[in-house]
Image (cartoon, rainbow, N blue to C red):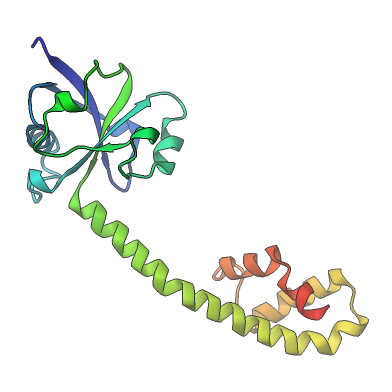
Length: 197
């Protein structure tokens, strides 16, 4: 294979771990759609239920060093050549994307399957639903705290007030472990201190 190349690929899924990288050998003259077929074949039986055309392929060039897992967790897959992320179009030849030889010991292709997109959109919808509920819990907690703290503020120091807030939060139905986001917000922004002063 004179124009052959080895592409290190990784499927974006729940694990999204470097130890799941696989390599595909292909020529630059082939189209992206052929690469999709090869990836589907390599990922059997996991991709049995998916048509190769449903896969989204992203070109990246990430060195496979100790920082790659951190980089992968923060990586946003959007067409942005300046950030080194490029969506591959099925009808284009790989030569359009790989004019030079792909860097050795790098991740070259990230594969997104339809199931990953569904999981992501479900998470986003869940967050959209949870946010108003969290805000409402915070407002309820503040209202309860405001009423009850004003009764004791005259004789309490700020440290004692913090302990009292923790007790009142618990009595309001907000437990530290169950509603850590709410408690963290209350303490981080010092909402109680602002209410009583």
